[in-house]
Every structure is written in C-alpha cells, then in structure tokens.
Image (cartoon, rainbow, N blue to C red):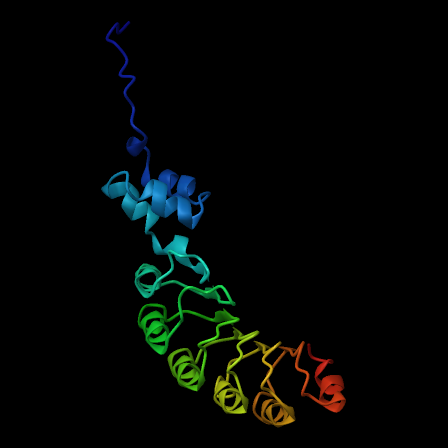
Length: 210
C-alpha cells in the first residue's frame, strides 16, 4: 500500500476547459466582466468567449455607457445575434451612426435589433443601419421621435425583415402605411401602437398582422 501523502492542492484551473466553460455559462455578462475576467489569463479567455456574447442589452440612462463601452462590447461579440439599446428621457449618451458602423464591422451575424426610445435616431442613422445590416429579420424602433416616412422608406430596403415595431413614433402618418404595405409584403408582425395620426382604415388592416 502506497503511504505517500495525497496532494490536496487541486486548483480549479486544473479542470478540463470544457467544464470551466460550462461553469461560466451560468454567469451573467456583468459577472463575467467584473468577476471572472480579472482573475487570470485563462479566465479572461473564458469570460470573453464569443459564445457568451450572442445577446447584448444596454440602457443608455446608465452613467457608465459611452461609445467606448459599446465599441469594446461589439469588438468581443463576433457571434452577436440580438442587440437591444434602450434610450429615453434620462439617457446620458446619444447613439450615433458611428456606433452603428462599429457594430456592423464586428457583428455580421446580427438578425434582431432593438433601438427603443432613441431620441438621436435620424435618417442618417437609418440609412447606415439598412446598409450595415441587410440580413436583419427583426427591427424595433419603438418611440424614436425623429422617425418619419423617409426613414420608413429606407427600412423597407430590409428584404429579410419579418418583424417590425414602429409603435409610438409620433411623426408617422398614413403615407408611411402605404410605403410599408407596398414594400414589405414579407412582414409577419407589425406593431403600430400609439400612432395617433394613422387612420382607422389602416389600423384595422394592419391589426391582422400585428
């Protein structure tokens, strides 16, 4: 019988990397950044594994959100498929066309985009969005106050779009509905809540696909 002492100094890093990946899969992205990434080189790689960054959500009212924050997150998210950015009256940061370009340069697999209550979302940014993400299947621009029929005309260039939310975009009128019905026949869902300048005729027609 071997009486040599048993080494009880097993380190978590001695576990197979597959098991470590499984462990960190239960952590939030915030926990990955603040708790896991600073530990060591191995854990930093685990925290920044693109598989962990296929969905991103930002609230622009948070004081820590800047262009640099967004760009750094985009750079580590080449597998990103769903992005949500929420603005509102308490936003401390204004999204720009440059931010959209940066996202497009790193995140070619994006298919779902939510830009909700973004006060800075204008025609220039919509043109950039449509050019950068032709593969989009779902777009939510709810509450974007600058959105008008010119913006919607460009959105209609998204030939793969199946879901569109333009609720509470108060500049939109019946002309916009004519554009959508003519150029987005592939739509499966359309949200138009809070559009006070849309006639009852169009509201009843589009309620069937909302």
